[in-house]
Image (cartoon, rainbow, N blue to C red; front, top):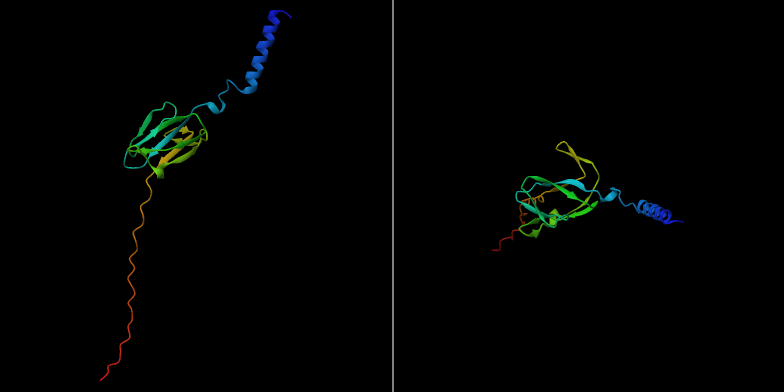
Length: 136
C-alpha cells in the first residue's frame, strides 16, 4: 500500500472511532435553559457553575439560568449564608415548562417556608373540690 492509502485508512478509522464515541453530537452536553423564581421578600444569590460567578435573583423576580448537566443542585444564599429551605435538586426535562411565551427546560421556585400556626388557646379545666362538712 502506498502512503495515500495508509493515510486514507487511518482517517477512516479515526472517523469511525469518533462516531462510535459520540464526539461531535450535541447529546447530553447541550446547554439547558431554565428559570429561577424568587418568591421571597429579599435578594438571593446563586452560584453560577458555568463561569464561577454569582447571580443575584431580585425579590419577587426571576432570572434565566443556563446549566450544562441534566442534574443540578441549586443552593441559594442570603447575606453569604446558604438558605436550608431553598436547596433543591433539579432534574432537567427539555422544553417541558412553558413560561412567558417560551418553553424552558426547568423551573425552580424558591419560596419562604410557611409560618408556624398560632397555638390554639385551650382553657384549663376547673378542678372540682369537695366541700368538707362543717364540724361544730
